[in-house]
Image (cartoon, rainbow, N blue to C red; front, side, top):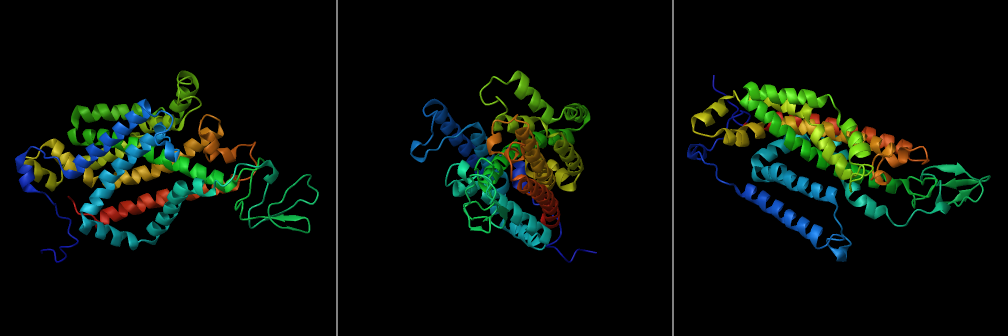
Length: 393
């Protein structure tokens, strides 16, 4: 009996004229990607050769290596996520409707959006003054502490009956050094966002390339790549980073005590095995689908089939796996900062977890738990949305 619900049927959208031509033609999105990367390359050369101190002196804007890696990640995010959504409005509307119908997806998205906003504007908005020892150990604005018998204690808020009440000048209080806990949390959030996006970009590229090649080609290629993944996964990225940062690369600029760039590169290159396995399994299933055989029969090359049909239909698996890896990267970076193996530790969540810093521990733990749960839920919900609302194309 024929289907009476064509809108829900998962048909294949194949441009048969393009398939029959054989030779792929560059699309405007690909041209835009190449141009954007070329612009970044020119700016990087200018920054490295002509303006090594500040790229834009008037704005006091200086970019280091992790910033350039983040910019590349954002360009790739725009090319492979945002542009396809804008170009295919019909499919995007289907995604939005499916997403709005899932309360857990909305809740996790709101939390993650708040996380991004705090990372982008929080450090500048809260950085109104330097740390002041005379403002040490201030309570959060909803708390009060008894300080009548404390020596040389300066209360920023109101004093009543020997109790110092919190003030909005320091919404979450201060450390024993007079550092604003809210400012430290905002800086840690920015470090987490930069690391998560940058490392996820590297992991996504490597895992997709390896998993797709293994799953599509099969045979001895699949066996060799799978064996390599098995061997690599026996050595965690955390161990590789500690060895590189403390023994072999400790004297190189940017790696001394583990710069953020080194963390992103090491974890990005050594922590993608699990994602590659998921992609391989997905591609192994997709390569036997009817629309793939139809495209091959029409004269499409293997590269064209992979680029236009296999990888796009594996997006849900890749996105879900990456969203689950990001909070683990944040936790690993926090641990490294806590251990003093991270040069960006003074701006990391690990700064507030160290024994020599009082206050803020409960806020950091709460934030990390919230982020971990939100990323996990968001990844699962996005996978459901993509499975329910996507056409095979």
